[in-house]
Image (cartoon, rainbow, N blue to C red):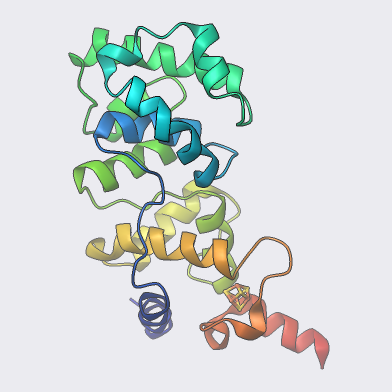
Length: 213
Ligand code: SF4
């Protein structure tokens, strides 16, 4: 691990001592559902839905009984809700038919499910099963490439570069730290660079300072 990476992680750990998954869930199945719903929307919006949805339909058995129409109604406040409802019901069917009703604990298994790609698999593996993973979502992609922890133009290369750069035991926490930083400071438009605790180590900020000279 480069000295810069070490400093960045130390600072982010100090800044966000509570960094963790911000989706609410009690079981691997609920996390899988919430993560599929979270594509292109906020965790806050997903939590608003699952706060009651998981009370009424807490597990695979009950969730599988929901009709497409009811599920659409329950999740209509998030984007792509029709597609997500369809995928969630298909995913339930696949869990029953292909995995004996259990959420699989492999990248291959989870990413074979409807609505679940590599990012969803990494989130579930890391948070529900304790498998070291770096899920690269929009925040992790933006923040890690701005800082210079990665230098990639797509999420897969970013994930591979972060895996090389970081010891395995840091993967899951780094994912949360970068998301926390991306939501609170290194936002997409107008990042708060002058207030940022890692600005001395950030390539993006160095470029801004250079251009202002
Ligand atoms: S200095 Fe700016 S661009 Fe760099 S990590 Fe901080 S907020 Fe993001």
